Amino acid sequence: MVVLATFIISGSIALAQDSEGATEQNTLPTPEELKENVDGLGERITLVENDVATLKNLKISGYVQLDWQHFDQTTNAGRAVPGYFEARKDLFTVRRGRIKFQHKLGDWMNAVLQPDITESGLSLREAYVEVLPFSSPVLSIIAGSQNRPNYEVEVSSSNLEALERSQITKAFYPSEYDLGIMLSSKYELFEGFDPKLQLGIFNGPGPVVETDSYKDIIGRLTFPVPLGSESPVQADLGVSYYYGGIPQTGDSIRKTVGETNVVVGNDATGSMAGMGNKNNFNVEAQIFLDLLPFGGTILKGEYMMGSRPTAGTAATAATVGTTKDSTGKDVVKITPGTAAQPLQIRNQGGYYFYFIQNISSLMQLVFKMDMYDRNTDLAGTQVTSTSDAATTVMGLGVNFFVGNMRISALYEIPSFAQNENIQNDPVTKKPSDAFRDADLKDNKTTIRFQYKF
Image (cartoon, rainbow, N blue to C red; front, top):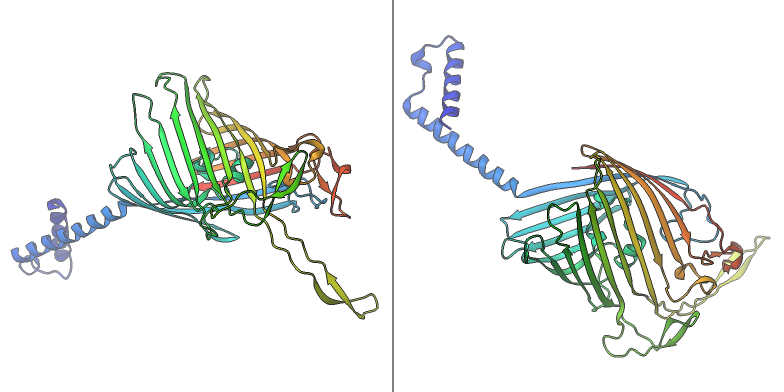
């Protein structure tokens, strides 16, 4: 501070001497003026230091993903493959536009707010407060909109090697985020072994308005395999369980019995009837290999099995109106109503598997296999609706990294279990066996440009 003050005073004296030809007696500051200048400078530096300290507690980060997607099929042939079929042949889209604000209060509390901004509008992703009572991962309490505890869910969308999460992950953990409270604890029991336990209670439907009083409970335990820090192989394992449900009202539900979906009596009664109709058990593994001289190898995957309910719908009445006939005259038009549909419960399962090979720090090759069976109780010709079909997607991709930029290309090839490739007849709009086993043009190419800051 003394050096800075001396520099400022010396500059002031030099400027004063150079301008207007003033004499030294008239331009030199008095000792009292010097003291005031130094004191004022000290106050300003203190204010700047306080502002810098405040800004250090606030971190702003984010990323923008711009996609070009090409779909092989250009017209709707009567069937929609969930997640992959698309009637538009080519499109540009802002897949994600995330900006994350994080404010830390020492080592024991922080708050996060993260919206997502795309051409479709603005949506909330994260909005939570985290408290660490011991200023360490020994105990963490997170309340608000946050990631559900699951491996692929918790991987940032900016770091997904195959660009998007797997079918089974999106089915069992839709939107990835949910509103609730979660306790997390990570403690090193001995060198190289620090298991992590997560237990959360959530609304259930994700970061949207809650529609019932039921809450979903999710628990997850992950732990490293203690192979030693010098081992060329490192592995993490984990298990998790999801237990929840939606209200199961009415005197009947739809379930799979034998070889078909049928309506049966609703045996669940009481104020919490239906709790448990949404559940799944998961087993996960991530293996990191440092065996090749030009980059690391990663193997990871997860198997999930459980059940998911589809909410019932109320009946709608027929409507009567008018329309024009071929001659232009008004004629009566009756639009039939729809019958009520009871809640349906399906047993489901699936897995995903990644093989990732890094080629130095600039390039990464990716192979992914992703399978989702929407009804594990039906197979082959028993499947008469895409709502019960099993879809397998093979993905081949490459990622290039240049500074803050990542350029990715991914080619996905969906296929169906034997005899489950159902389409609706374009005329009757009903499932037709004539379309089984047809290899439709539903492959998908994605080119992504990502900038991360």
